[in-house]
Image (cartoon, rainbow, N blue to C red):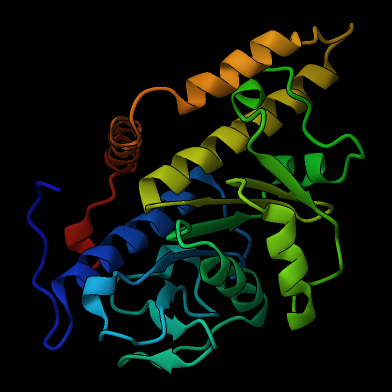
Length: 263
């Protein structure tokens, strides 16, 4: 990224510090978009291998339990291992439900460097419907073939649920937790954000279209397959660049600057 960032604290690898600043900015963006739920829900990102000791247990960054998203900064993010051990100089508390969900996916999916989970009204509303998200609008069509579901087992505090959660997600990048909410995974924060934005928009549009009179127009199977192919079209680097542009544009729109999120 071509931007001036505040210097990393003493003893912290610059790659971890850059990630912390970007993750803190993402928390603020979720707040701007209204994707918050009191002090609950999480956005996590795996600490780069370059910032860890060789052979060390993988770690990820998560918001400290008890803070609103608007209070998250680069410095107060908590670093926790996949086994639940808090590392680094910030001993903040980690919400058990967040640990159960996010650690399971980070551990199971090497490509899931960022995991996002939200409880928006629209997302939970669709999650409560037996049919789930139909692939009959512009955004849901793009998600065809990359959307999974996980049955509700109550508040996610039981480690026994982890293998079932991972099994439900499989190799997909979008997950509807039935009766619960939405989840996306991605190779970095901007990609996971764009996926969540698309899933959220698809839910919003389905609710709006169902509120209108008349039948919805189904999308033919060949068109759905073409839409899915367009999601995967081009090279991965090119798609990631577009997702980065969208993420940075939204940060500018929200007036969020990494320079102001260090402390």
